[in-house]
Length: 465
RNA sequence: GGGGCUAUAGCCAAGUGGUAAGGCAAGGGACUGCAACUCCCUCAGCGCCGGUUCAAAUCCGGCUAGCCCCUCCA
Image: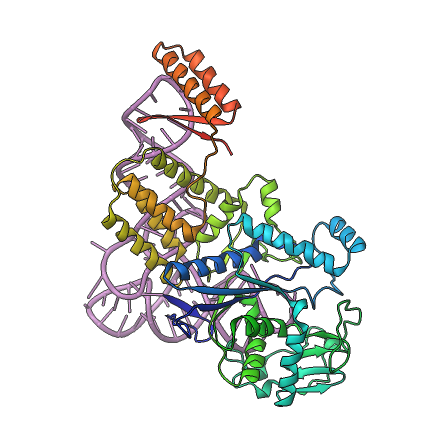
């Protein structure tokens, strides 16, 4: 399996540290507001990565954090729907808000068929672990205390700018608003590990520590959770490209200073979803949630399909035209599969199966080329191989694509006999050229949510979603 | 100001040196009582300029345009 590694800026063979399982850490959401579909794109990419690894015969142990500390107070949110969020904030504690949006996040992921990571942990539940790490960083002089806060000294990192490719003397520090520049730091790029004294005086979540009552820095949580649940050697660390600097750079610095050796071999980043105004974010106004798409009648899986059509490392431009197009294609694919399912002709052929299985697997192994993976699906649908073989291939592909390609149909016996009876009557009517009656029967079925189609192999029916 | 990414038909998109995958849309046709579905056919020379090569969308140089990061951010 080949993957693009931000650390080396190359596509390279993926070799995990040990043969036991792939240790995968994925930065989770900050749960002070709804996730937008751009956020969700990253989680779709991570889901596909995890499933592709499994499809390529790896075992995966994956951890995700819930960032419920560090961003809760002093949020000058200008997003949509101030009414409901405002109400929430007036009547609930930060903890309740975190739980609320956390639950909302996983609901969205479930709708997108994103598998929940094996381990999901709240940042706020591991304060002791952060304190342990910070204590050691102070002991080995990688960190220092200044003005009531503990800072990491980036000159102690082996190559602080390796991941980001930036150059130290060319970074702009605090130019936007010099008032916020922190003069307690030795180096402007040093970052906080523990705050007891910061500009965020109204931080609501605070804990006691050896350095006074306060709260952890924004980067220590990922290091803390990854080390605790995945050990000293991490194979894959994921996140959105915006995390490369400073978040992931800081994680590397503090983790390796703590461990005394190289920590994570592969850094894999998902590109952003943009809209016509640029990056989708609260401030740009283009804040689209999955729920909003559903309200407009879109199937969340059509959005997943849209994401799979492109590559995770390419910026994707969102528009309703593009989504509409994905809906049409997705429904056509489902329709074709439905017909194959209703006519399971021929015998299963292992050679045909192996051939396409291999092509599909290779597409995924090629830095998650989901676009080609989908093309492989189209090719299977078009090919003259047996329908039984096609069905097995589709089932297999859907292990990764997770598009509910094989739809479950809940026809109970009563409904089934009703349909069969109605279709029989309609056939008779058609044979008698009583088209008024046959159309009437068709309309009656439609009223009951049954859509029928005449094909050369007979009439097929399906439930209207 | 610095760092990075992208540029392929109306739209999405694959391709990483050997005469441009695939999908959507569109046009034509078959099928059909009608619908819908399905099937078949058609449809680009790869942002611009220059270079390397027998051969370039693919490599090199320059340019242009757009986006992202450097600040919480997926």
